[in-house]
Image 1 (cartoon, rainbow, N blue to C red):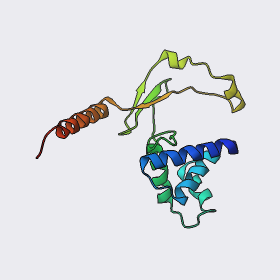
Image 2 (image 1 turned 90 degrees about the vertical axis):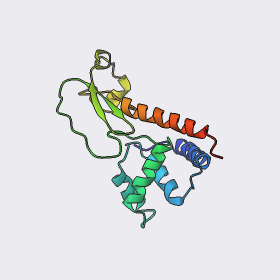
Image 3 (image 1 turned 90 degrees about the horizontal axis):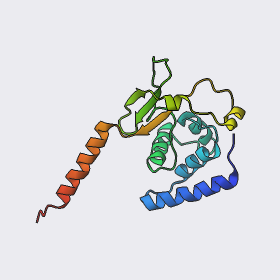
Length: 165
């Protein structure tokens, strides 16, 4: 499934603006990689993107594609599906349940919710295929990472207020 060309150009404009604001250099490789992700509607993995990019930039490495994709994700320009930073995760719990994934450390925890179990599948999903299972994945910082982040911010604040002169 391809994306609307006008929508892609709008995304490219946003891409340029975000990179400029973040002080990240806009390179030809980054632009081509982002355009490939934006062009594709089927959420390609890094290997698929690399294979398509090789037609345009024969010298681009898979490592460059991975690093660029994670940079784009860190800048909020793309998102990931499935486990954070690669690697399949396995779950033997076959009962209806959902997942909380820590976007920092990758911690994955099951949780149960009757409300999520009863979510109505939108009719438009029927055009994509048949739904056999509903599973919600929530992403955020786990308690441990949130505490560490808060401590780090507090320490930086304390250090910033000290006169070392």
